[in-house]
Length: 521
Image 1 (cartoon, helix red, strand yellow):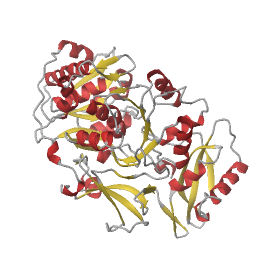
Image 2 (cartoon, helix red, strand yellow):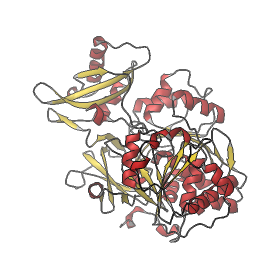
Image 3 (tube, helix red, strand yellow):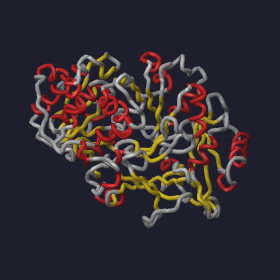
């Protein structure tokens, strides 16, 4: 890939490079052996303990007769076992496939059937979702269980206890594939995305250090999980890059569980998604005193952050949310607001080390102020999709990755999110951005969340339809629906107001918090 114009020195990462050596073993030589690396629901683990676990996992995997570049599937809840297995596999030259822990059996059948791993390492509470399909997955020769009851399968902990803690990292190159992530499935079935050994280094340097400003004395808490590209950067790559500490929570993030962890551990950095920030704000008892009074910065990604949410958060918690844009294909954020330069209602500017442009349907760059699809390139770009050549051709065009997101870039260089390319639609010959309409709807005191999709009227013309989740205790009514329509009309162009409003209890979302508008359509 020709990336000479992105402004990084690729030789900063040695040609022979195993990411586990940098992110784990290095800390023992840099006097961090006793520093706490991870805190999970069961305890605290130093960098020396993490390195010990990583080497034991590497020996366990080699004991399964897994050869270099073999694949293993990880369905592990957020706990110290996730980084131990992830980096243990990377150290052994084995490729971990990080699986969403919130999927159904049908999704796992699809992902593992296409990915063809040779082993599965699964948290005990998730085992039932795999038992009925293992006979259909002939490539899986070993199943290891994280927990206390293996139900006939070996326990990872037992195997680690009998393994040695001496392991020399396998020789790999910076461009070798190190791990897979799965796309979130916001537009359909998840896709396996292959990432190189050098990618976590560049993501940590360009976003973690340069934008987030993470330091060794920081305590990071990420509500998005480790299987998610955003989450694995927040709570695995960035803290280990600088020798900081990360808090891991196994349960699903809810406003209650997030505030409990914030109050117990007092993180200095918090990572969330827009829907979670909105839900936290909906409860007036969620204050700095009830959470963490040490917060110095918050970040958001996954979907664009509505301006109203960002401003309300800053007013209540006294810290800014740095809204940014990333993708599984780019491993983490490439576009972001930054400390001292926060423009709520925008996705910020391109992060130095990445290059982006807006293009029309023919791939030609559009002028500033015009709508276009964002394409981006940078050193964290994926090696491609697994077993999906058609998608690769459509997404990876030379060094450019097509994001599928529509933006307008203003004269100051800030990017204004308009919606997914497949979510945008024309009404009466004019473009409608669902995100713009949704952002207005949630400014109404009675609205918690909203999603807008195109719907055909009796003449077959597309008009906006809104699905609305109301604040707790607010009853749905035709009168309120009319009030919301007028609320939108007063704020933006008339053709954008929703002709129909349907009140629902919950919006369909991916496990990473993205609204699945295709299901509403």
